[in-house]
Image (cartoon, rainbow, N blue to C red):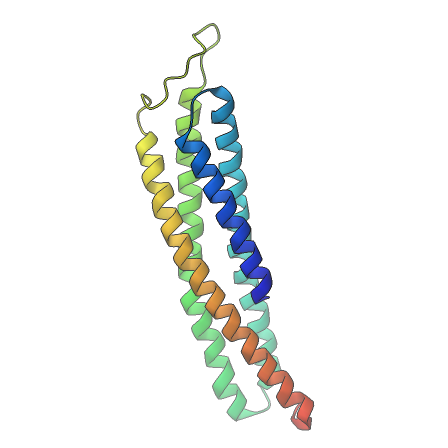
Length: 177
């Protein structure tokens, strides 16, 4: 899972950088459409990654608890570990998801103001639309929080994987039921 998560984080980062580059270079209706689509794709990928990690930690936490429930020493070591990992990851991941959603909605609102009315000039009032900077601020904030969340998630997944490997080793040595 750590390698999968790292790969997903790289895809997420690439999608975000691409959406940002398109947003900074808006010049016509085509560039607006491309930025909107790239932003939506990046948002969906990021949310998917966070939700995947959340469900992974929930599922493996239950598996770890079941695997060590008969051995008090292991239960005292690994059950609190899984709880600590979830307490570190879940609030940050959920806040990161919330910020991505807000940034996406603000971006969609800004883009809806850029669509010319039927019969109007085709020139877009880029940078004259009020509120684009709010989208930029929230997008920047979302980027920072998501980076912090991805770091916390990656560390938690690595620790979780190490715990699973230790429990598997313990079970293979004839201690498991």
